[in-house]
Length: 377
Image 1 (spheres, rainbow, N blue to C red):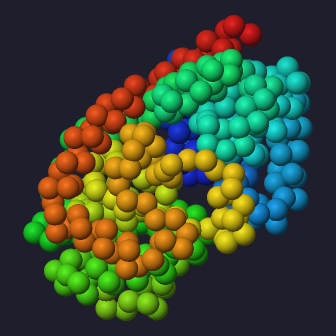
Image 2 (image 1 turned 60 degrees about the horizontal axis):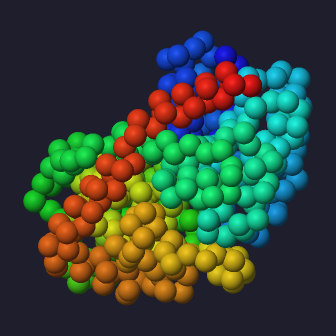
């Protein structure tokens, strides 16, 4: 089986790696396109660095547009000359949907894995999705219901992270793996894997940790960076704004860091889902370029931004967006968990219920749906 695939960022890389592994269990594969390190280890021939697609915002991608257009043209030429049995676009809808549309017109079956947030904003994109894809694979059940209402073929597969992360978390074991003091309360500080996330929230997160420490000197802090570049950037911010802060730095250990924490300060995105799956109380923050925010606030019609709150359809955990994301507010919300552990305990039951809903053996379900699509073509 010949697979074309493009993943948009590191979270898409993990989805793609699991999917490739599940497909390979059923068939001999060749895989090419754009993938991250985990996809490459699973045998994906990646033509470009996945980081080149990790662009967030409404305005910011414009500066990269010539490069992105060049990449998409290269992929279109390659896949039309070496036609795959199916093309799978993972996330990155602004990049992938246009490519999927052209490839589908060229007679190549297309799948879009991870629904764009059409249920939240730019709902007219549903018409483009219907034209561009033969099948949408959704991570969350409410997304599949939305597509059914609009007569777009969709399959809810669950979330691979819900399969990977155990239902019951051993905090002491996580502390041991990180060589942390078992008797200390640690707050995890996770400003995000993208450069712009660290740029917009890194200083605020450091000052939040400093404020928490000043209020409670017994606290210590842990963080995990996605790569060495983010690690260096965040360490520099800590040195600049809180040189004495007891921060433990890790790289590529975000799951252990979440599991070991008593509370987590996290940037809105996939990390909020991971934190929920690790049953940890969290405070969610998000900030972007002001012009982008002013445009987005008129386009996005959602009561919540954090995935735990969206999945529960109510505010389970605090959210602070843009100017509301200030150190004093974030610190107060984090310390509330530390001072009132019963609040953290109450969250665990709800988080476990949501975890079980998303535990569907996603890689296998997604692989089976793709194989069935190929057979039907």
